[in-house]
Amino acid sequence: MNERQYRCLWSNRQARAALRLDELRSGGRARRTPVGAVVARAAESRRRCAAAEQAWQRVAPPAWLARTRVDGVVGDAVIVVVDSAALHYELRRQGSTLQRGMAKLVPGLCRVRFIVAGRPAAESAAEA
Image 1 (tube, rainbow, N blue to C red):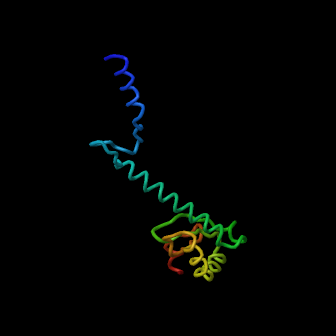
Image 2: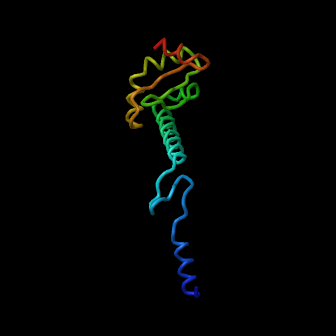
Image 3: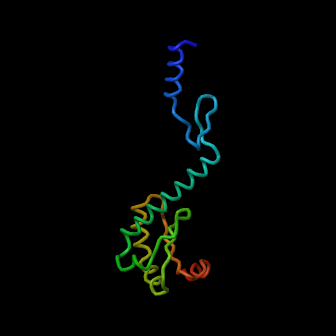
């Protein structure tokens, strides 16, 4: 191998993009590994939860923000944890307005579920 061939080989190796950890190269094309698929689903879930948190900050009245938090997104529903039963009652009364506001800000979200902190979810859902 002469110097020109060596430099050509070196530049070809530099030109190729390094594989990401979640990619598998086969037959000249990159495809996602099973681990990459799990990581992608987790990242999408985290993005949806972050979008729901931001939407809740915009939709909920400021007096309620300190006493509520977004716990997560399950399917098309946002789970909001409330610190008292009285606030839970108020939020349920305003539920349709809050749902419409959240649906406008976050595509794919249709429902808002309120759960009182410290109580089992089944017990809070039975009241709804």
